[in-house]
Length: 264
Image 1 (cartoon, rainbow, N blue to C red):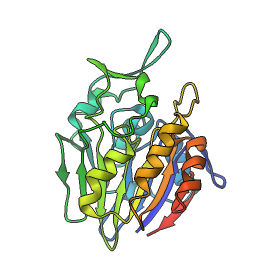
Image 2 (image 1 turned 135 degrees about the vertical axis):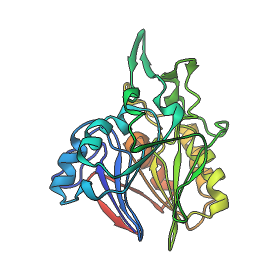
Image 3 (image 1 turned 120 degrees about the vertical axis):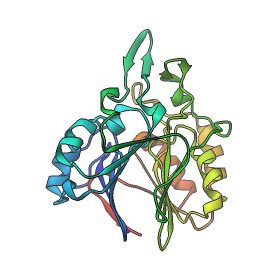
Image 4 (image 1 turned 120 degrees about the horizontal axis):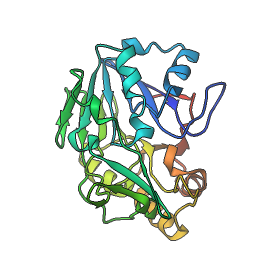
């Protein structure tokens, strides 16, 4: 399995960094994208790294925020064959609040009726290699960086957020932002005995650049230390301050920057 970060907040090499996420993944059976990033960064970086997006057969959009699915319209113009899996509620309105300002950060709901898009409700098995799962609980190690995010009814419950399990030679869990909490996600995923976990942990407010308190980071580190032998790669909304803190306590944690490829 080969995983390349095509969109991510920090750059490694000549590719363009951007706040958002898109991972290109080659498995035994699939060429897939996990998230699409916010804009044309995906296409520019894919071209720079000689990755042909027309050959992608599967797309997972992790949740209904534009930094993960803003490039969906153009992707549909570039690729006419990929099956795109999105939770139904991901197309509902989503907002970010700062002081008294409320900004739309949602997906373009006019795209949800495109025939390539498969709208799903809850956990979903794509095939024997790929499956999606939701996490309903948010009680352990809640990140206050989520407090600025809203849906149409109030504070976001993140039931539009899905995680990917890849079952190959190793079991890999991939998260988008991990809004429901990486501790809760790993507890749900523990039944699969994951050997690798990749994704954002949402421990830094993207507007204020403020990292969550050290007390929370300490609790998260303590919980993740239970997964002996699991390799963690974090990125995007975790923030460098949180990553540096966690990586000092979790030797099997690395940063997956834009332009980097890992083989599993």
